[in-house]
Length: 246
Image (cartoon, rainbow, N blue to C red; front, top):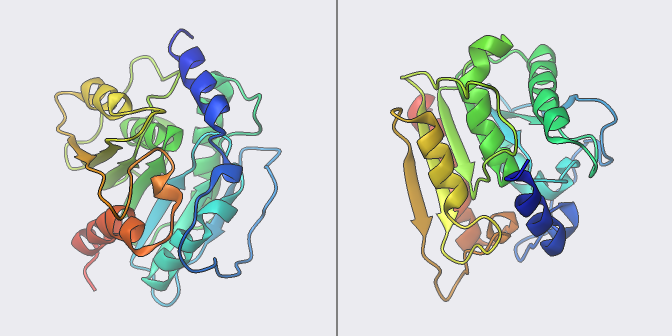
């Protein structure tokens, strides 16, 4: 719980949730998806357009209970043949750490029940969801859900509670974690802590350097303009292309 309090306090101060979305690109496209906080641990599923190449399990940031803030990225993935599962692991702002952990497991299972994967699975996540993406990869077998072939964590936060032991990420699963040099919420600590938690499994940690075009603060991944797409969308596209070539 000592690790939980500073993290949640920081998230509350900066408003890390759906309302904090920063978008300077094109307006989001209209999608048929739930836009209210889930009352149970279920998942929204956004099917691939055309033949499904892969499935991305996209785990949201703290209090981002609605997929609306991720709509442009989800739409982009769908257009490239990727089905997106959006687990609603957090029932609300007062969810406890143990409830969020249980919700992650339940919601991921719900997503796969709705959409059994037809190709490789990638666990992706932003902020607290990036941490839970690693937890998912380390416990997929115990949870009886498909193992991800890759993990992609964007500005991840170390989850405030994890299974004991943490679990073991499969040797075949690649782990890539991004941090921002201007991130004043989690900094690079979350990525470094997650890499240490799964050691000796290798994890690639990349700290992005801000430029005149984009400052890599905690909310940069929620942008939809060209610099943000290049920094955050493109690496995931490359993971999909590596695992499921066109």
